[in-house]
Image (cartoon, rainbow, N blue to C red):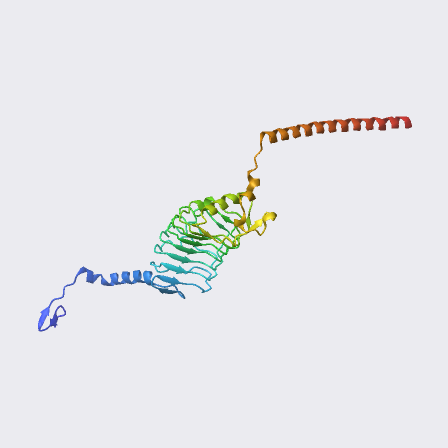
Length: 301
């Protein structure tokens, strides 16, 4: 039988060769590569239903080549010290990122630039030292951020959470914060829960604006008030943060009257006159002593 014919039911058919059939090996290769990129799972990790679990593997570096459609990524309970810049660039579907219980000191600038769908971020139990301005830039759909149990976290930039109008839960508990700028929280119009206990708060005059803001939102904003205590100054050490009243900050608002200024001016004038008189008397005394000493020397001669 001629190779160009196919015998079927007693009849012969001539198969047609289309361009798609000619390039089918190439197309198959492309499909295989794309499928592996989408569905491939990093070694040791488990992947299922757009969830990638790489937790508890003692990893010192982040796993490369995650499935591109990853929505939930867990890198918790590892030994990560850094996250490479641009690591999340390709994973635009990411909704949940769990980085808790690692050894992260800082995050690279622009890590969340393409994380527009990220809603839950857990950075607890790390070694973060500060939260820089616009750290979560473009991740404007964040609903939950956990920065708790970072004992070296001593500074939160006033614009660290700028643009996060969807944020409902913010956990800053058990860190090293002694001060938190009111500006860092004022733009969080959707905030419902704020945890700040376990920090060494300095309850001086700079704390008053934050306390006033919290009191005005206490009905809508749940806070761990029983755990937030003052570390300094000594007179309020150990006192619950929210036990401080307007009376506690009375000294911060002392103003001087005209009588006070006149009294200060009078005292300053008197002290100046007294100082001049004292210096004059000391000069005369020194001069007399010098003359007396010289006279004694002349007599002895």
